[in-house]
Image (cartoon, rainbow, N blue to C red; front, side):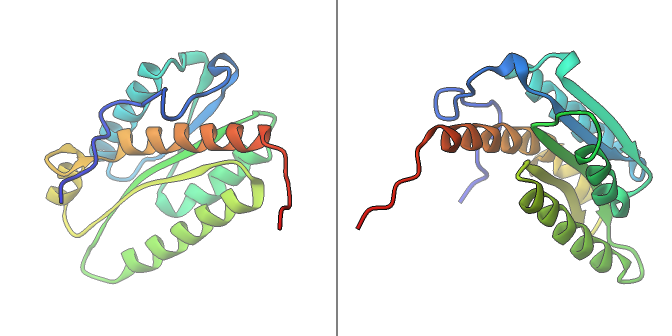
Amino acid sequence: MGLPDYKAYNAETYPLKDISNLNIAVLRTEWNDDVVSQIQSSCISTLKAAGITDEQIHPYTVPGSYELPMGAKMILTSTIKADAIICLGCVIQGETKHDDYINHTIARSINHLGLASGIPVIFGVLTTNSKEQAIARAGGDRGDKGVESAIAALKMISLKEKLATQSKKISF
């Protein structure tokens, strides 16, 4: 089983009503800058290829992946009307188990923020055993977390729009 094709956003399958009104926050970490810069670049390129303009993309930086949930919460409670928040980072296993604690905490927290707010908060964090694995998943032969994250955000915005237009009916 191969990797899904995340090369482009499919506007026919996941239509967006008015792309000109969307605002997407792209929150990234400082740690593992070479890898995170690559996934941020591919994320933004994917959003632009889908029709999102520079003015609609709001980039922010936090120190590390552990701070991603707090940064996302700050965005959610700010004056920016974000239609989605894409959280990008890279946690590489070290000599201790710190990566397990960080990865579990941020995954749960990012998921909770999305559920609580009703705004898609995308987990675009690489959780790898080595730098080589991170590079392979940041546009190498194992995919591109930046592209995947941008497309996930667009698909979730599309789903939210679709469900907002459907009336709720109870049938027996």
